[in-house]
Length: 420
Image (cartoon, rainbow, N blue to C red; front, top):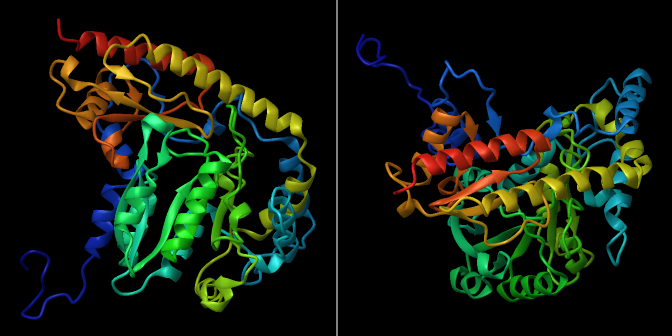
């Protein structure tokens, strides 16, 4: 036996190398590398400023209404079997009503497909759209999961820029220059991950007109929908569904602070029926026949979760996020080698620029984050993992005292490595 081979023929199988390459560009893959630098002898607790999962902190707790809804659905014994393709009807109806509140048209349950979180929605959308030679336009910086899923689906990725000097608006000139007859879609994340921006109505209208001109659909990632605390209100991309067909992706993960419940949706925001004509809807249904659904009792709880949660709960979460964002902006001002071009106005993370020329023994943003983890037990994602080298992605969905501690450690690290 040599190199795992047996006899003359050897084994006929090996791992798909696309997976190995895709994993390298994901946030989770990057985090594994960063975490490997943690000093096991460190007595201080590790502070994570890298993942949008605030559920570990007592100040971020889902509403009892959501918990009671799940318990009630589970104990009803009505949701112990398999869910229908597309999801439980009552859940689809509730999601349609929830998303229709801010649209100029009404969604139908037939427009809604319940998914295993927003991640599966992404996978479905890219799988259905994939065809030989196709390419998709992704934002830079962006959420690297799209790039990984596109690679696995055999779809070429082309990046358009978000412009920090213009509050991370889309560079529409670049979008037009990148697109060709094989471009299938562009991804828009609003509120922004990783930038913390919130697009204005006027800018979204321009994006919609550009996509229409290019003949492509928009994949609108709105998993952070309504988590805004700046001057710009959240505007669903579906508002422009009559201009350009939109696949809206979302979930209860962020707004209800339950990412582990894994219940999301993929919605065809398309009053003109273009996605039906082009067989995209059929493709989604076909995909779901070979896939799995979220657990049925969580789906059974969706009508109560979406319909009965009061504004007080949402306002409390937004107030904490606003306070945390303010803390970040003020503390970053105290660090010479890091600058914040735009104050975050939504979601749970934002981007800051790292000036490595001001530091000693720091090669780039990846080296910075690895050494920060080793010396201070603070976890931050390097901008390279979201295609923005020598920037940092900081998550502020953290309990304020822990956030203060983490940013103080970040400041100490930068002062220790500062050029004299």
